[in-house]
Length: 207
Ligand SMILES: Nc1ncnc2c1ncn2[C@@H]1O[C@H](COP(=O)(O)OP(=O)(O)O)[C@@H](O)[C@H]1O
Ligand SMILES: NC(=O)c1ccc[n+]([C@@H]2O[C@H](COP(=O)(O)O)[C@@H](O)[C@H]2O)c1
Image (tube, rainbow, N blue to C red; front, side, top):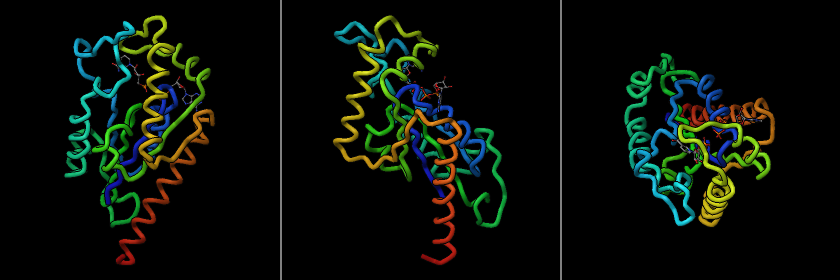
């Protein structure tokens, strides 16, 4: 059984924090980070606003990301081994070699249909403007934010992409990123475990 779980949502919403903990605790779990698919810096366009357009989908090689997800789906055991993930042998129950989970984490996951179609479950972390701006101000990216980037580019693009996702009726599970790290983890871990158990029961019942 293969499960692809999206952990999407606003920048600094807590996606990486949640993902890291899930990856450690879910069976045979691999991870793909959307950030790893940013195009080279010299290919990131500069907008009319003067800012490098980091927060638009064309800055990311979405096709390469989807191909990586498909490579996992074709042979999760091979993918896991080549990414240093221990694959546990087993009998077909949760925690066994027959269950494979891929977590895909990123801020622009649900604005690209080929990826949406691959997802078993789509989480979306949201936090309010003030908290997002505060968290972002303490973060250092490979390219530091120039003054005004958050209000001039990052937040408006977040609102735009979120609206687009809602307009397209993408069926996300909303997560309140103001909850504690533990609460978020416990909620999502339990939901995924239930999904894995349901899948196993359906297999055992032959449905
Ligand atoms: N539930 C939470 N409550 C408070 N702060 C959090 C929470 N989750 C993450 N953070 C903090 O917010 C910042 C961004 O978290 P991160 O997981 O890197 O976000 P993202 O991957 O969505 O950009 C980090 O400083 C992290 O420690
Ligand atoms: N990874 C990079 O090379 C890079 C460079 C500049 C900005 N960023 C920022 O990364 C953000 C997305 O990542 P997070 O969701 O982890 O914050 C975007 O808002 C973008 O502005 C990333």
